[in-house]
Amino acid sequence: MKKFVALAVVMCFGATCSAAWGIKKKDTSDTTTITTQKDAAVAVSVMKGLIISINIPQNEIVVKDEKTLIDKVLIVKPEMYKAFKVGDAVEVKTKAGSNIVDNIKVTKAASVEKKIAPKKK
Image (cartoon, rainbow, N blue to C red; front, side, top):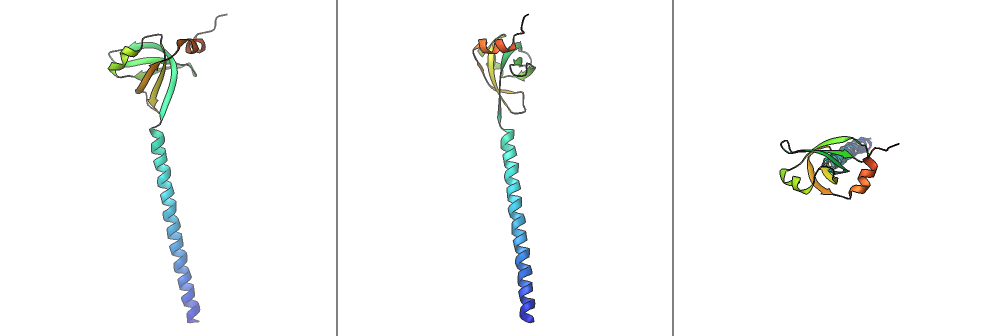
């Protein structure tokens, strides 16, 4: 009978340890998920569009997105103003969820203007 009780105690102890290790492993996977979400926050968003206006004193440009046709106000660095002018088609890279421009380059205007220009009847 003593052997049976000792065996039951050992089995309960083993089950408790296994459960504790399983919880610890689950917590580790949750941390990985959080890290992945942080990496996603650093992701880059790319937008193509047409420059509608430039506001140099406030370091802002307004770009009409070619996909959604919505005007978006973006913040640029002062040294970036030399690279573009109103009416240029541009490809803008920003951090996802941000309106601060990381990189901007002028693209072929014909493809963007065709999508953005209103259709005449």
